[in-house]
Structures are given as structure tokens and as C-alpha cells.
Image 1 (tube, rainbow, N blue to C red):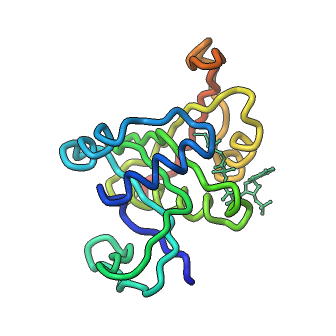
Image 2 (image 1 turned 90 degrees about the vertical axis):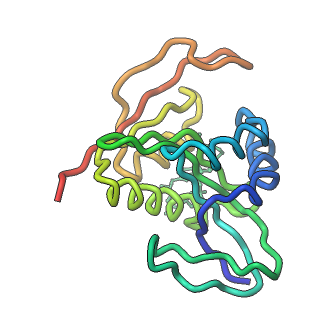
Length: 170
Ligand SMILES: CC(C)(COP(=O)(O)OP(=O)(O)OC[C@H]1O[C@@H](n2cnc3c(N)ncnc32)[C@H](O)[C@@H]1OP(=O)(O)O)[C@@H](O)C(=O)NCCC(=O)NCCS
């Protein structure tokens, strides 16, 4: 079955929280996601899904819509906010079985495209200092470390590494 990137919608929330759990990320309450998706116009998310019949690309976003019928399985997601000229990645995760296949990269690039389309050219994020895989991943997408936020995380307590990426306005 083909893998597609779709706009994160309330119907994906349950599977997104399952991916969060599997990946060891802090799990947000499903209702909080629904509230952000419905009410916060700065919140933007994408999901990578396996689905049995493809939808057509939307003229508005260029990202495909999802067929109403058929099976959809969320393999990974990215969520963040875009407030031009800045964009912030809150979370990015891909289920263990689907890693190293370019899914994380596609989600990241499509999120950056959405930010660019809204004139947000500076993107930043926080990552646990010990998460060397994610740090390597973000570096491969042009992010570099700019500072440490001491004890930013709880459970377990750990410093955050703040990474950012800036591109030329076109
Ligand atoms: C970080 C994460 C999203 C990457 O997703 P992915 O789909 O595996 O990433 P990609 O396949 O697109 O990898 C792109 C590049 O990132 C780097 N990379 C990714 N995983 C890596 C690993 N385990 N070791 C070394 N480099 C890695 C490589 O440069 C890779 O390119 P390559 O495969 O051509 O060598 C995934 O590992 C994940 O979900 N981790 C757990 C959750 C997390 O830590 N999220 C980030 C904090 S919010």
C-alpha cells in the first residue's frame, strides 16, 4: 500500500498518540490535540499514512486529501506552529518499524514547505540533549544547535538542545 503525507485531522489523533507513546515522547491529551486542530490557526500538523486508495492532491495545499473510505494507518507525524516569520516544530516521530525509509524527512520537508508558503523562514525546535539520532536527523535537514536550555525536560529531567534553521527569503 502506498505511503502518503496528509494534513493532520482530528480523526488521526488517536493513532498519533499511539505513535507518541511508542516513540517515548511526552504524550499529549487527545482532547488537547483536537482543540489545537479545531481552534488554533497557528497549529499545523502532517501525518504520514498507509492507505489502500490514494486521494487527489488538493489545489489549496498541494498535499493530497484522504479518501473517506478505506483503511488508513498513521506511521508518523509532525506537529508545530507557524507564526511568520518563525515556525516551531513541537514534535516529530515515526513508528519504529518504519524508520530509515525517508518518512521523517518527507514530513520535515513538507512542514518546511508549509512554513515557507506562509513566509516563515526561520524554524526552530527543542530536542533532548541525549537524543543523538534526532540531532543527527535535524542536522541532515540544515538545523544547527544554537543553545542549551537547562533542565527543560522532566521525566527524566534533561537539558534541551535548541536547534534552528534559517533560509533566504525568495
Ligand atoms: C528522528 C526520527 C523522526 C527520524 O525519522 P526517520 O523516518 O527514521 O528519518 P529518515 O529516514 O528520513 O532519515 C533521514 C536522515 O536522518 C539521519 N538519521 C535518521 N535516523 C538515524 C539513526 N538512527 N542514526 C543515524 N542517523 C540517522 C540520517 O542522516 C538519515 O539519512 P540516511 O538514512 O540517508 O542516512 C525517528 O528516528 C524518530 O521517530 N525518533 C523517535 C522520536 C524522536 O526522537 N523525535 C524527535 C524529538 S521531538
